[in-house]
Length: 115
Image (cartoon, rainbow, N blue to C red; front, side):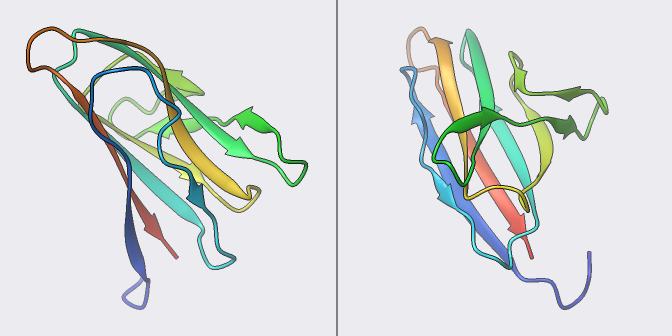
């Protein structure tokens, strides 16, 4: 990372127990890349990575899993880190379209933006 890079963190979902669109990250002109951290102990989940275009519509966004180097628009696994290019989008979100939890289990999705 560039020594002059500016880093900012964003919480998409913290302790989620139901499917949700997650908190939308409004992208500024200086935001280039985001690393998305998916953690927790949910029994099962489907996380969909989406960007909002200038037309106001949400589109699935391909990203890279930094552990496996797989490229995908969604994941069903927990405890992963994904990376996405933000330059084409007005906003970015991680939507949890399906989630199964039992007891105190949950999912947390955080992002770190690098400018």
